[in-house]
Image (cartoon, rainbow, N blue to C red):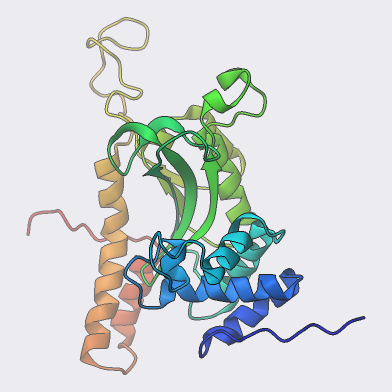
Length: 306
């Protein structure tokens, strides 16, 4: 078997990290492109989201620069598998004590939209872009983020193709809604061994009955926002047209859910930060017991009058 040609190393300690992906990259060009792409966003650049600046070339005028073309080929034409690279990244995060999540964190599900002119780009279309608060031409990606009191980082992402990309629109068997894509990502995080206390999402996902049902069937606890009218009778009538009974339980709402989460998460963070700011010694048993109790979900009421 022919020995692999040596690859120009990434700067400093970044090479040790980059080398952990070499077995997933079959050619020298892929290994070099991976290192260049990995280095670009971390290096001081004026516009680190453009290929020209990532390759240290002039915008527009430097588009034909060999380094830019090499990076463009790596990202758009080369045969490496992005999902395998991301799975390895998640494995490394879970294996490192400094970045490993714990079971008191949450799995955040959301989507992010970016404007995009024209129609040539894959999965582009006129759709709701939450970042801008309006419907516009762009690309939307559904994402999962692991978050706890210490850190947060993205786990998985999948682009959302609008219904008009499919022959039968929303009735096409290949079409998937954002909640359906989010369900797949939640399962993927769980299968990857990511611990979390609950899946959290806004009302764009919380109002979807099938999404909540799927999470429940999978044994994944969740905290979801609901629109104000969700599950509440209209025009003051009950579910069968009779007068509304005030004593009937009301559905959970997002502000209350946030307060419930903050009631244990905020004190848990504040207690540890205050103690560490005072001394590096371990907290006394009484304080440690309080921290442990709050960390396991025994909330402190932050809103009751003193």
